[in-house]
Image 1 (cartoon, helix red, strand yellow):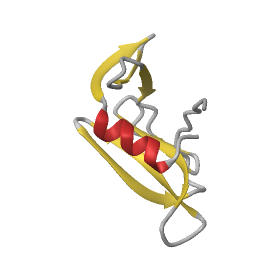
Image 2: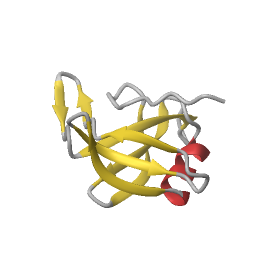
Image 3: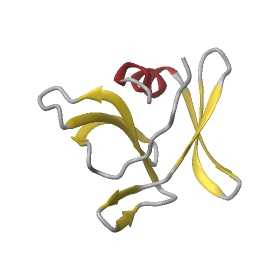
Image 4: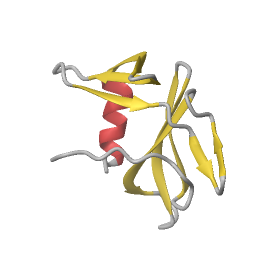
Length: 100
């Protein structure tokens, strides 16, 4: 999983374009070097409840929260808004693997 720093780089140094790929809404995120990644608007899960599918995305980082080991940072997007936050790691949010 990406680190907090890698998610911050995506959020602040890349160009975000809302698009649809294979019928799935999400953002094409393009870096300054021309490489890109598609982040589906997969929504989030809380228990059995799935919400905001096709509208927003929540992507975990591998970085623990600032105050508790059971928290972790994540990247959130909805509409034109993108920010980082911290949440309990048992919440159902997306994982996007990265290669070193």
